[in-house]
Length: 242
Image 1 (cartoon, helix red, strand yellow):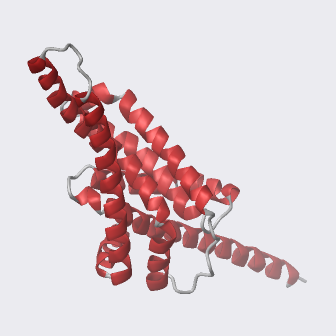
Image 2 (tube, helix red, strand yellow; image 1 turned 30 degrees about the vertical axis):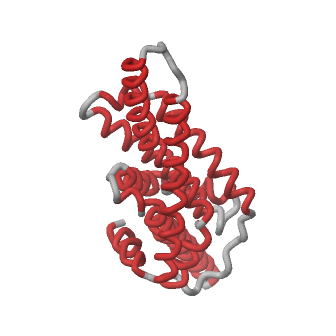
């Protein structure tokens, strides 16, 4: 797992990955900034009590609330944005570390967008639902990591796995290696929780999950090969008996 993290971070300096990073970074920041600005503008344009100083205070508090909401929604927006650049990031990782892989299944843009939107809606809804817990010191860290770690592990796993597997095989792999993918999700959630670092998190998360997924897939292949070898050995030994 640590080796996968190191590989993911080291690849950020590659020109292709760097271009993807800049594009995803700009897209994520613009999306969140626009949402935050729209929310603040709508509140500023509304006279709640029609008393200037009170309305001014409400506007300030509303701006702070909009900023907090943008931070809470960043995991959802980051995953949604990374979905548009998934193939480019995954291809860059595979070209460097897994050159023998056959071409991946082409995922229709509509499918990637639908998965991203569905996930973004779930993350946003759950984070808003448990918003009061984020105001409890100490508890908020565990809540953020626990909730988003699980959600991000499922989302990034699906984004990566469905390039290589059908849904049945992907579900089977998730059940077999659930713990490993959950740990990967916690790492991604931790990245998203660190200011500034979270700006590169979507690209790192996709690259990291490709390594974790390929490691699990090769483990499955090795287990299958070992089983077939043992089965062949049993058949051979039985056939050699007088």
